[in-house]
Image (cartoon, rainbow, N blue to C red; front, top):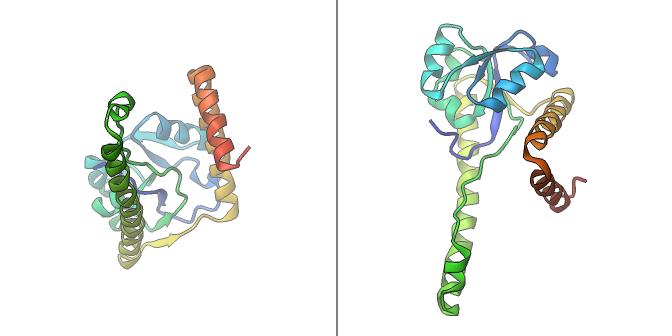
Length: 191
């Protein structure tokens, strides 16, 4: 079950007001990043892939994790958990790449036609993304889950986690990675 480009939220079986509330949780880890989050918050990382999530929840192997509304819905998390915090820990994106040399080799009318077709496709993609993201959260609510934004302390904790994960990545990525992050921060106005 891929996350399908949906915002990632925090699932839990209790109120989570700060990252400290996750200490000791049985945390579903499915990649290096989610394992590192478990380490940073003092949770016990348990490797569980999406296909195994319903069984892991039913048997108590995990009781907290980050994943999309879509994966939570598919795994019927409401049967075991009670809370979803819309922390939007990350929002995966789908992209289409084109070879620049091949594109530049096309005649101008063909280039313009491709760009003209791409604009409404992008708009349609963002619209569907918003609709589906909302639909999944509405389904979690309808199944009895408490769906809410993170409180100020939890949001601040996640920002701090993000800074730490970025710093970890930059240690491996070097100068090229630093340039990418700086360009992103400049474009997002977060410097």
